[in-house]
Structures are given as structure tokens and as C-alpha cells.
Length: 490
Image (cartoon, rainbow, N blue to C red; front, side, top):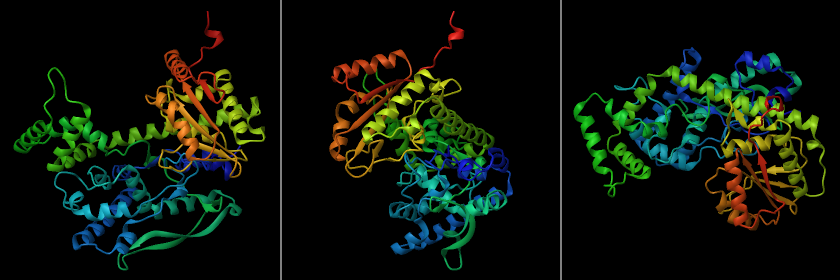
């Protein structure tokens, strides 16, 4: 069974853990990314230097932006980077591919540098500037862009970090000398330069290790959701009475007057917050100041999130796959068609989850995992030994399917893996499958619906009856509810 870095390169998990690196999957991206705040908030000199190097590059970009960048070749040279897929992090449902930083990101950043980083190097309110600020302004820069940019700006460190471990712990036969593009920036030549490294090599590419203590999941410590969710408290913390009153007064006037006996909707409140921030960008600086004051909180939350990913995608998946190997013929299936393969595997999963304690896979600290993205990654990791292609279909303009299992161009089956708690489940069951089938030129599809309690089961069965789908063999319900041990029944 080979799923993780330690499996493929024949090293112990303790060796990797003692080095401080995360044991990544080489089957599928895991939902983690580098949070640049963890570099800023660290006491390690090498991390603090990394944060300084990011700010140095932002300073260079700002100077060029102020001078006026009109040449698209300069934007491409300074802003455009491929996704660093070799670290196997991100939200790809299949493999480790991603889009990277394109021209849209480059133009958005270049044209907004003077707004986003107006006080770069001259901060009066915050301790430092932060790359994540770009994600707080409505300029078309999102969390994924910040993640990709951070990884590229720290690539030299990650490559050296990996090389040091690889030379000391991995068989030379599994290493290769690689010339890597865009590793460090030469400020005299004003261009990104390549550099040579000795790295772990597999699947015709090198692999990058990342320290656990700079990783997080879901959101950066500095993020839009917190800024908007804590908006009033942030405003009330501003010590300048006049500015604070002006901000709150503007916010109240921007809110539309609600109808009688009703409150403003969340959408109305969010729009008013966004409008207020556009007119008073100082709010962002006071928000960041609060975040800077809780460095330990950032470290603790990121540590907890990384441990959750390890529990879910490494420890529990390993046990789950071991159960599949020992107690079923999940990895010995060799049917004639992709539909048979996919359906039999889904039914094996159903059996293990419902009857062989496989339900434990979907719980952390006794709480169910109710994120479809996570469940889809879990499902993909169980397919590591298949001869069939398991891929996420491209978006055909009608929305992407979760997976397409195929063998050749004429044998394709679509799989949707959904939660019963999904509010759009009925709509999805009623229309999307047929649309997907037409768009992907196949008549084979399977719906897998995971439910966690009786109320969810009743909801799903009622929906299926209303849609006259309750007897369809390609719709599989899986009970992931916690099971009571027979020894505890009195």
C-alpha cells in the first residue's frame, strides 16, 4: 500500500516527523497551504527572514507599480508563476494539478499595489505589512492566489529544506539532480533565476517537503471572513474618536432600512461592510493590528488544523485502506466496464463503512465531517490501486462533476459524492446528473449520498420518492452514523 511520501521513499514516519515535515500524499493534493502569517509570527530566524524576503519583493513590485507598468511582459515576468504542484497541497480533487498565477492576478496586483500596500515599510498602526492584505481588498485576489504566491516566494527555502532531508535519508536511486525554474529573484537583473537541487524524484517529477509549523487549512490567519464577521468590534477598537464615529455612522447610513419588524439580511450587512471598508481602508490596518497581537492563537489554530488533516487523511485513511485490503476484495476487482468497477467499489465502501467500523473515518473528536470537499478527497485516496483513470472532469460550462472513472474514450462513468445535509441535494438529483451525462457524452452515472442520522435518512428517502428515484440501482445511500458497540447494549 503506497499512498504517502514515507511509503514511496521507504522511510519511517518518525524520521520525517522528527525533521518537522508533513507526510504528504502522492496520490492526491491535501487541503493545506502555507500561511505567511506563521512566518511573521514565528521565533525561528529562518522563518522571520522568509517573511522579510516576501516584503522585499513586494517593495520591489510596489516601486515598479508606482512607476507604471504597461508592458505585459513585465507583468508576466514578475507576477506570473505556475502552481508549485510538487508540494502536493491545495484543493485539487484528483492528482496535484492547479492553474497557478495567471495574467488576471498579475494585472490585479500590479494596478492595486499602491492602494493595498500604501504604507509598506512605513507602518504606523501595524507591526509589519502582510501579503495577505491583498486578499482583503476587492481587487480579484483570493485565498488561492495568496497561497500560490507565498509558495513561489518561499520556493528556494522549501527546495533547500527538502534537499537536506533527502540527501540524509533517502536512497540515492530515488534522488535526481533537478534544475528548477524561478527559484530566487536577482534584483540587479530584475528577473527570477533557476537553481539546481538534489531532490526526491517520482512520477517524472520532483517532490517538495514543507514544515508542518507553517501550514494551515481553510483560511489564512488574516482573512476576509474574520474581517467582516468581527467588523463592529474592530471599528470600536479604533482609538481615534472622530474616525471611529465617522466609520460607524457611514456604515449605518449604508445599511438599507429594513422592512417593519424585520432585520437586515446578512447579504445587506456584508455589502454595507464592503462599502464602508472601501471608503475607510484604515479599518483593515486596525484589523491586522488585532491579528498581530495574537501570534500564539495563530500557531495554535494552525497546529490544530494540521493535526485534523493528519488524522483524517493519513491515520484514518491508512486504517481504512488496511481494512479494505484485509476484509474485502476492493483492490482485486477487475470487471469489464467502468460502471461495474465504480459501482462495485462504492458497494464495498458501503459495506465497510456500515458493517466494519469504516464509519470512524468520517469523525474527528466524535464530530462528523460534513464537508463534501473532504469526503471527495477521502474517496479518491481509496482508488490508489486501480487500473482505471479516476479524474475530475473539466467544467463544461454546466458545472464540473466530482469524478469520471474511465478506461478508454468510450467507457466513462460519472460519480457524484454528496452529503445528505446538502441544501441543494434535491435540485442536484433532479437535474444535474442528466446535464452532466450529456455534457460528458456518457449515459453512466452514480450518485453516492452519505447520511449521518435518521433525520437525514428520512430527508433523502423522501426526496428520492418525490423524484421517483427510490429504486434506482445507481443511487447508493451510505449510513455513516456512529455505531453502538454490542458490548454497550443492555
